[in-house]
Image 1 (cartoon, one colour):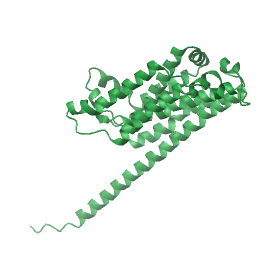
Image 2 (image 1 turned 135 degrees about the vertical axis):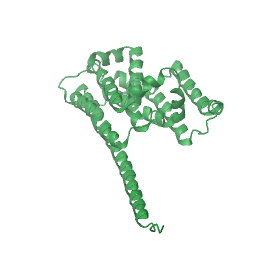
Image 3 (image 1 turned 180 degrees about the vertical axis):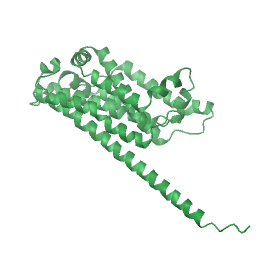
Image 4 (image 1 turned 90 degrees about the horizontal axis):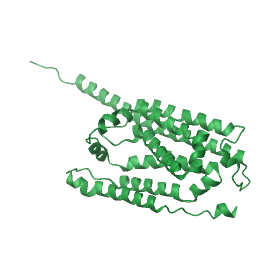
Length: 280
């Protein structure tokens, strides 16, 4: 147990430098670049905080003991890390990126012609869910645990999948806006279905699906089978709750818009009916 509790931070210098470069690029984009392009819309404090939080949480997820404990000992801890990379980090990065940065990038050759087909609900749903399901196939999951390069690719693909998931919901771009509310209700309802099924299959499997966890040292009185059950439940339940919360927010936003529209139409109708008759 002491070995688990004393798990150290893995200070990955190349990764740290890459994250610093991303933050420097962000600062340049919302500062000097914005002035050069004569863009009036400044990044808000909320956007800056969200972007920095996304980068910071990503660094914690991949360099803290969460990573080493998840790789060497507990499947459920690895699942926590993946949930952070799929649900939390991408959402913060999208919220933190001003829409005009995306709209400027859309002017680059070939970008718009590709993204306008990729960043729509049907495509984001299919690609993101395929990525999440395929990486949990035992042979690929085992490869990620054994090989650091494969593991890094897995993490990058999870973040990309998360961006695809959240783009139709959170986009700030005028050229690639979020989907209409009535579309989002269907989209958010369907999103947790594939991972819920996968989580249930993992939780209720009678066999340990990933052999490296079967032979990993057991601590805290958590057997390999119980560890797998907990990991499956984490994939199954919290992910569904996140989307249900999003459905509630989108529904009430849509309801409020419709109510305002109906009230506006009623006022306009009353004003027309009360107009004085034309005496000419």
